[in-house]
Image 1 (cartoon, rainbow, N blue to C red):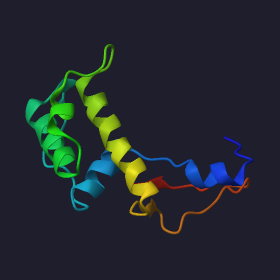
Image 2 (cartoon, rainbow, N blue to C red):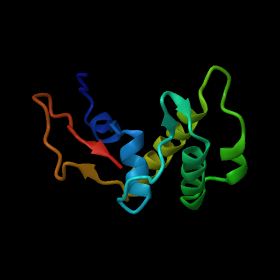
Image 3 (tube, helix red, strand yellow):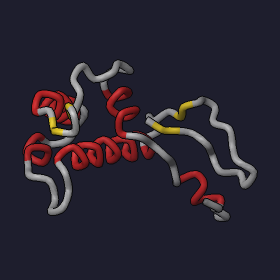
Length: 113
């Protein structure tokens, strides 16, 4: 995507839920999958909920049903992305690779977590 406003270039970042969970988990992979053969794995979901709660999200928020037409794992992934955005705003997020290269338009090419 072509971003022409310098201020937007700094604010627009890319992330990925599994990279975010890895970073929030002390740069260790989660021990349990969130899905097994396409079905939600309750133990993997609980592991992610507990990590998100330890990272500052209210447990009551994490325990609510996902929004209509959203899957439970997608809701937790979105919560992880929320934490990445907060970490970025607070100067705690890091790019991968670091330092990030830029494309021909000057946009950063990195996954942030």
